[in-house]
Image (cartoon, rainbow, N blue to C red; front, side, top):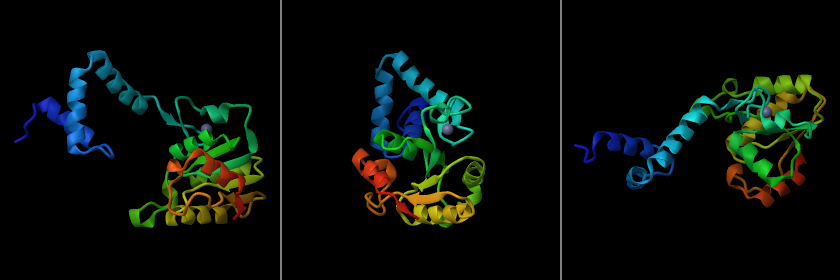
Length: 199
Ligand SMILES: [Zn+2]
């Protein structure tokens, strides 16, 4: 028998599914939301609803955005000869925060992970190849995470792109092997970009 009333119990269950939120934290958050002014709690609910209804993927790079193209793809100030390939929108955000890259991005929306049943078809690799074929990129920087799956994904893509006249590089290993791009700090990412090597 659950000790909480139905709605509270449901909220605790939902919050408890979030990464890093255990049962105790979920209960604390739920009771916090009961105590704060109603408008504050509703604002949180609305923000959650909005990211699901208004946010979509950029049609060019698959970054998250609210319009057809993201702000980076719409900007006229980016270097359109360099393309940086990342696994997730949050990796793109880490690279943007480093302010060390002014080119365009391509978000794969994952990495090839045979053990999890994720193959190349489930990623945005076809769109990437089309972009490289039709764009005027001189360099494609592989910025997948430095672990087995990220490296495998990067190798798979670089083989596909080998037929095009672009230089393919990857981030330097300033980021410790196995670490995840989203947790790397700004300086590490900037170093990794500056020191990028030919793949
Ligand atoms: Zn975009």
